[in-house]
Length: 461
Image (cartoon, rainbow, N blue to C red; front, side, top):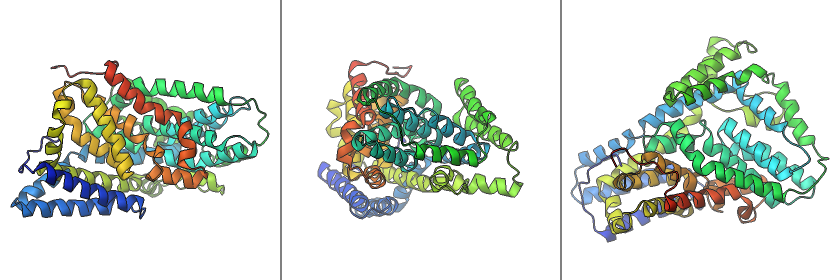
């Protein structure tokens, strides 16, 4: 990771003690006090600096570790800026509203749970946010399920499965971008590689919910009609609004670098918006920076469509830089290397490396309850072991998503788990057995690691 040279060789006891304090500080702040992770990470950085100074390490060396750690995330920072611009430009062009409208047209009386899963998957892909999907259309589906006297636990499981499938596979998702950039893999190469585990998980989940769906008459369609009417009232639903998406797909197939692909699609979206928008240059620039604000008058629609802009990425960018800086210090002080040495004998096989990285991602989710840190810390710790067994970086980025991103909503005290329970009114333990996609993803990634299927090796290996 970062190829940062350790300036200290701490004892195993010291390394464990420091990591325990860091984990306890961050997890207690997030779980007990529901605080953003930024401040506890900053306090952990201060703790590590004090430890280094106590060990007679110069402040300059510690500062270099911080800078090198943060520097590893600069490509992610620029990509996040373009993601923010892409989302806001896709809003004004009508690309995202049109995709959402198309998704609602799929809702039929038959296979209700399966349709809920498919529609939330489409909307999750469209907006790149699982929690926004849950808080908007997820709430609508829970209302319909309750009116039809259907199992709210199964309905919530279908919503969570679809929302996190969309979040995981969307080029607009911050976790997807983070996973690819942390290990230096092109965004769209990362997404394509995730298909090996994600598509089977999607198909199996769809079959499950199709089997679980009762034969019913969908009498209460008021919530769906409200969404569709609100979307139409926005004036953003047009057939030509999918052109920016087509541009994105074509450039992705052509293997154009992610940043250039996102920029080209954003430019196409801005041009498309001129057909139905009369925005001044100052307004356009304001939307690209601050995000699109919907004003349809329908609260659910406005929440769904008001998003994007460079400014919306600041929270994630700050978290990435702080977490990577902490990682840089952990490597500079030799703490991670010390811990990995203890299990190095177990990390000589491809299967054990993949299983260990997956269990680390799951463990961080359980201990800290934060999916970003699960992705970041797993990526930081296992780049070296993956290289040693000859595995390409995209294998690690896939595991980080399969066992990091989608596991967070299954933990009752996690950020996602608490949010979903609050919004849907269904406890985490109730919907957990039915969040099939989230359960299958880590199982499949470990299974493929054991069998050696779908893995990519470095050319020199």
